[in-house]
Every structure is written in C-alpha cells, then in structure tokens.
Image 1 (cartoon, helix red, strand yellow):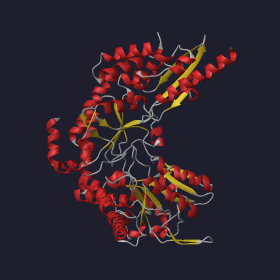
Image 2 (image 1 turned 120 degrees about the horizontal axis):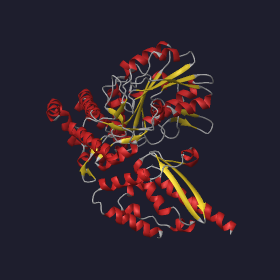
Image 3 (image 1 turned 60 degrees about the vertical axis):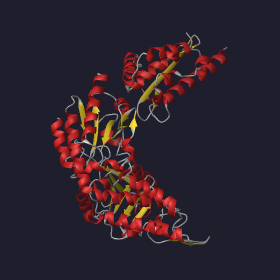
Image 4 (image 1 turned 45 degrees about the horizontal axis):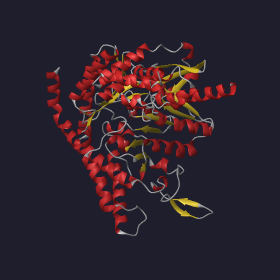
Length: 416
Length: 143
C-alpha cells in the first residue's frame, strides 16, 4: 500500500505543494492535524485571497459607481475589472453577461424569478433533474406554484447517471427551461452538459446550469457548452463567501425583468415611473459585494495559475485512490458510480448511521458532511436516510485518504 | 436519589475514561442497552425532527411521576437519550422543571447538546420540560 501511494505521489507532487498556500490547513482539531474533506460545502481560502481582501479594506475601500472621488474610482475600476476577469474565466462573449450575486442560490433564484415572470405561464413546464440541490428545485417549485406551471423531473439510474434517453421524451412544446446541475454535490456525477444543451436546444428550450460544484471541475467555457445560464458561488472555488456569479446570454437577460430593486439598478426614478439601468446593472440592486468580487477573481486567477486541468486531474487520482481504499472495507457502500465523477464520495459504513460515523470522524480530526446534503430526492432514490460525504480538493493528500481509511476501520469496530 | 445524585454518579462513571474514544464507546453501550421505543410510537406523532438524527419521545404520568420512553436512529444520540432518561425519568414535574443538566458538559459531550448540532437532543430536552409543564398543570387542576 505504501509503495503504491508513494509512486502516485511522486507523479503529482507539484499540485499538493500548493497546500501551504492555505493557512487554515495547518490547524489542529482535538489535538490532531485537520483533514478537511468538506470541500463540497465550502473550500478553504489561499493566502492571496485573504491578502487581497485586507489590502482592499486598508487601501481602497469606497462604494462603487457613485463617487466623485479617487477611492470610489479605484474601487469601481477594480469591481468592473473583476467582472472582466470572470468573463474571461467562463469565456463569455461580453462582460455585461456577468452578473454578480451573493452566491449560486441567489443566481438560481434570480433566473427562476426574472426569467419565469416573462417566459413561464399557466400550463407551461419546467424540467429539472432528480439529482438537483434543493436550491435548483425549490425556486422552480415556487415559480410553478405562482404561475400554475408544472415541474417535471429527469431521473437518474442506479449509478447516479442521468437517463438521457428520457430527455427528449420529457421535452414538450410547453417546456420553457431545463435546469440541471453540472456536478452532483451528493453523487459526484459530472453531467454531459453539452449533450443536454444540444438536445434541449433542438427543441428551442434554454438550459440553466447550476455550476456550484462544477465550476472548479475542469475548465468551463460557456460558449463552447452553449449554455444559456451558468450559476456558481465564489466560496466553493477558493474565494470568499457572499459572492456569486450568474452568467446569462444577453438575448435572455435583456428580455428578463429585474429581480430585486434599489440603488444602482435604475436609470431614472420618478413617482410616476422608474426606468432601469442596462445590463448587467439591471440585476445588481444595492451596494454590490465589490470586495467579494475582487476576492473571487483573486481566487480564480490563483486557481487558473495552478492549472484547473492539472488540479482536476490530481483530484481524479485522489478520488480513484479513495474509492480503492474505501472499497477494501467490508460492508462499505459507495453511492454514485458514474463513469465521469468529480472528487465527491458519498458512502455508508454497514448500517451505522451517517451521523454516528461523522461524529466520530470529527473526533479523529476528519471533517466530512453527513445527512441528505440538501438533496433529499437523491437520498430517497436510494431508500436511505443520508450518507457520509467526503468531498476533496487539490490540497488534499493521499495520506489524508489513508487517515480516513484507518478511521473508518476503527469506527466499524467501535460500532460493531 | 436526587436528579443531581444521578448526574454525579454518571460523571463518576465517565471519569474513569481518560480518552474520548472510551467515553463514546460507553455511550454506544448505553445506546444499545436502551430498550427501543414501541414500534407503534416510532411515528411522526412522537418524532422530534433533527436534521442529522431523529429522536422519538413519549411520556406518561403515573402516581405523580413522569416516565419517559425514547429512541433515536443514531446510536450515539441514542446513548445520550438513554442518559437523559436515566436522569429525568420517574421524576415529578417540578424535579424535571428545576433540573439543571450539567452532566453532559462534565463528561465531555458538550458538543452533542449544542444548538449548532441539529441532532434533535436539545429539542428533546425542551420537549421533556414541556411534558413536565403540561403534566404539572394537569395535576394542579386535578388537585
């Protein structure tokens, strides 16, 4: 076992070397070095992101788009530059197609409301999939209730792969939008987005992609994928919390109504009528999280410099190793065996309750998530109450997976 | 034995363990020994919904004392449920309402009874007190 690990480590040593950029990863919990396997919930932040945020508050901070003074100019420039960096990161055509939000959930709600108000009416249909996070189910459910529309669901199979053959059958002349996750936060499944878009577009149905987990898994090129909307959160890709992105094709965004209203998103206001600002400001009411945006692009730049494909490929090796090792434990079941799978492993250890496993892992210094992961339909699909989820990032190591293995063997004996 | 006598006895019992693993092992034993709640009561009506683990709780009044039966789907939660029952079952409503539960903290299981852990235990303690209050009112009206 040791030799195999060492061989694999040599091959990819350069990636996990970046681990030292993350100050929190040196801390201990309960007297043991922290093993952080809850990256699906949030990722840790590299020093450069922390320094950017501090520098901004120390040197530049001023509200954007309003000021007549030097600091406000600099602040606005940095914010709009951040938008341009995100545009480049996603390869969007125009920076006005990039809207800053508070996170993926806000981005999804924005589309469900602003798109839904204009394009969804009574009797229409919205298609989601069985593996969506609640954030990509509930806003559509609320829309359907509001409009008298119908929510339809594309199912997945026993491996956790969407049953694509069903997709053409579920698309009807009444389907207004398809909302699908890029990567399942519970099963790790990487969905064939380009293929889904091709099928949906052949019926003139736009596609929204929840990229909360997907954005850090390989390079996302929204033009190549031809998605109509792509949503993600900053904090799941090494950036700060409270900042997120919605990419939308201009042709859709232009025709959508504003979601929240207030400062910055208006052109003129009288008590008789308000006219709205142009894209992207139409969708950015109130003081934007400009420091979050600047922190986010520092993270995106950092991640790009490491090499997104190199990081993803290293995470794939970690995943493979974790699957191999965990499968050595008799009675351990892994949920989600898609052919294309991101570094997320959901499992149960015999009949031990996931909360019990998670609590003891915590005591051993290993942070995982337990429960339904905000995907109750996924958990119900397998007829279980929840899983233990280890979600990995490029700063994790093969030794940490060995620690998980050792811990699980102990836990199995403890509860046996 | 008073509520505090039992709490102190539990603290004594756990004090012989010098590491968390043995303490948890002991909890697991408690969890295993707790008689499961009547299958008919493992229903929504008796359920205290935690996000992470479920707890079922029922109470009945006999001769002025409250007897609790409870269960959980997670064994560590169940172990703590068993301890709470050991301390609070067979008590008068006033004893339950006046009880200050310090043993959880003292045996190093504080994080299990914290509002940040949505495991149903804190809600269970609240529910036990609610039963005590309800039965107290009932007794006073009858008396």
